[in-house]
Each structure stands twice: as C-alpha cells, then as structure tokens.
Image (tube, rainbow, N blue to C red; front, side):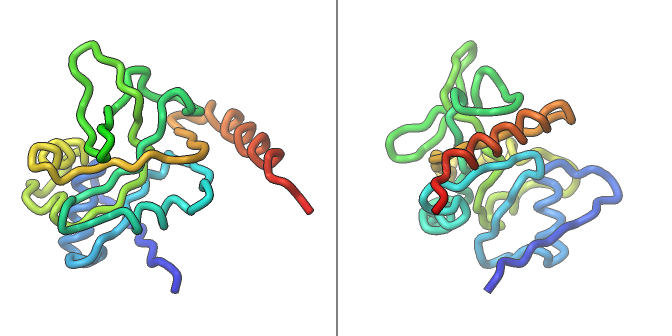
Length: 176
C-alpha cells in the first residue's frame, strides 16, 4: 500500500529533532518500526531506483539508528553550505568535517530512522544534528550517496533555479 504521511502543526517551533521526538511521543510515528524523515526544503529526482526504496533496502536497524541520504556538494543546485556536512568512508560511515576542512557531502534532507535516534534526547526543541552526533559517537549513523539531482530551497529566490533544474532534467528523459 501507500506510505502514511503525517503532517503535524506545532504550537511552538521544535526544530527537526524535537518535532520527531514529539511525534513519537504522540504515537504519530511508529515506535517499533523504521520511518522516513523528509525536510520540506529538499527536492530530488530519483535515479534508477527511487530514493526512498534505496534507503529502505539499505537500512539495517540492528546496525544503525539512521541512514541519511547524502549528496555530492559539487552537484547541488540551490544554496548550500560551501564547506559540506560530512565525509564518508567506503562503508558508508560519515564523519563531521575537521576545522577548516571542506568535505564532499551534504545532508540531502531525507533519512530513514528508528525511535532510538531521539529516544534519549530531552523533550522540547533540538536539532537532529545533536541526535546524529550521538549516533556517530555510538557508531550507529550511516550515509547513502544520492545518485541523481538534488535541490535545496532556502529562500523564494531559489524557485526559478529549481524550475530550471526540473525542466533541464525533463529534457534528458527520452520520449517515445
């Protein structure tokens, strides 16, 4: 069947991690099964295998609390960190950049996770970055590199660039 999509309006901003933790506490996300977390400011085109399928197939909850989709910074359309977010080893283990280091991958705003990612975090606002740092320390965070186009929206001025990216990509698809 189709995936269940949960939209939750917050009385006050909880940031990415706080919102996930609150949704789990209210039973809006499964406590015992993996779930997707998708940022609203990310747009991507699927490669040969759809992104959500790739994440679900590669995710091993016995080994990790989160599997993040990463994209190569050199191929990003839209505004993004010029430093990058993560380096990635051949086994998919991410690490944060060292001081003054430029790393090749950006978080692409999509991940599959379990409740364990935020289970020990305090209630209230917090960034998923804090949960990722804990998962990194425990060896329970991995990354999967995106194999197609990705766009990051941070401001209304990004819309024309996103539309152009989508038009250009549509022109690459053969028609019959």
